[in-house]
Length: 242
Image 1 (spheres, rainbow, N blue to C red):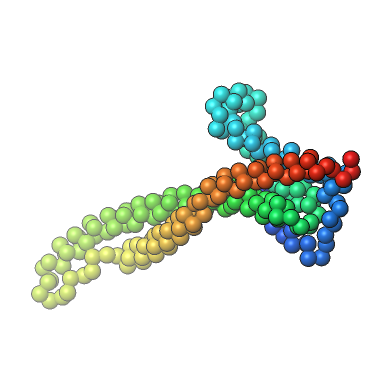
Image 2: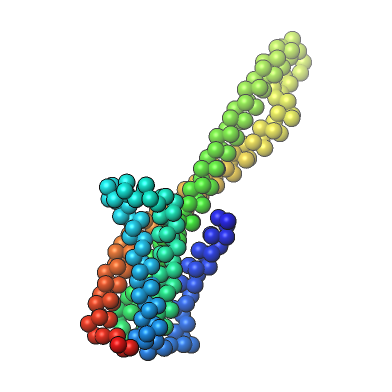
């Protein structure tokens, strides 16, 4: 079920990114102000305002405690995610590829940034964090195994030296480690090096996307400001279908 949700969100985010490119082959300047276009725009605005409930529950302690007894946090997060994607999709349908004003262009660009900054934080960084945690556990286990191999080889080394002491003038002392121990330790060391490299690479990727939250908050704030301006402009200049 979780995998289906992830696939659905990936397709929705891709749709938000690619749909505005359709203005090359299609544009409907009259649709946004029509009855159907206005209803779709109102639905988009309502859906885009729903994520504020989750934000308020996290930031306002009293409201959050009151809401905890009525809605689970997981449900609130799901509403935040799905409404935060469905709203922009309806907003793009409402725009109907009409990019004739700076406000419309700014709204479209901000919607894409909000959706993709949230998508990166919710899915990419979560997966990277899980991968780093799993690699770190694997790294600790490999280190313990390698230390155990080395510790078990030490008695063999002492025994080898004791046996070869009487023949040290005739033969070179036998090597201290068993061949099977050397091969096993080598495999563990190679796996340890691979795991360390993977952890460094995944942490670097996490650091690269580390600013997603700030970008998401800033772009979301800008989106709501532009949305209010767009609603005011629609009310001030009047709806075409009224």
